[in-house]
Length: 145
Image (cartoon, rainbow, N blue to C red; front, side):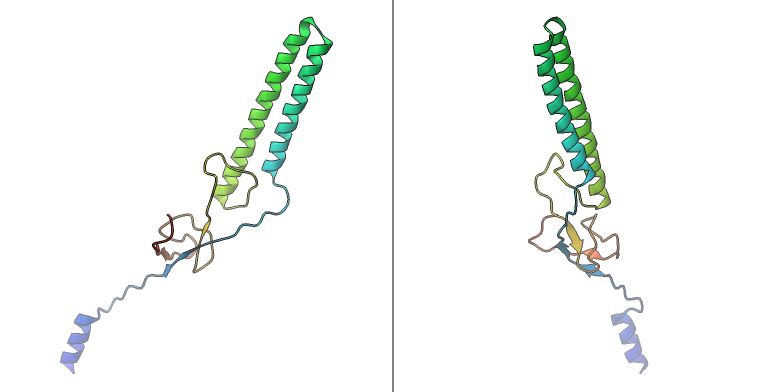
């Protein structure tokens, strides 16, 4: 009997380490309503169009100061457009970091894959471990990190 117990202790240590593993799966995103970033983008485009119309009206209405006013209106509209586009891009990046849905495109890559844990179905922020349930992510040969 003692020999059998010694054999079991050497073959099967008393501290077994079990790690939780999971695969990652693509998760679908739903978009509902109009996001603030889209409203800011549309406002930027509207200001740019109204600025161009104001510049054209100033150019044809006033001869001497019309050129200066026209250039100033185009410059102001362009700077407002750029500023509002930057705000919209910042909102998109903040929503992406938080794992929220966002509208429009972030400048850079055109396609994005959202990975989720097969164990708890939460979005993965790391390619190695799930932040939500702690499962170690097992990579199959077909997935891209």
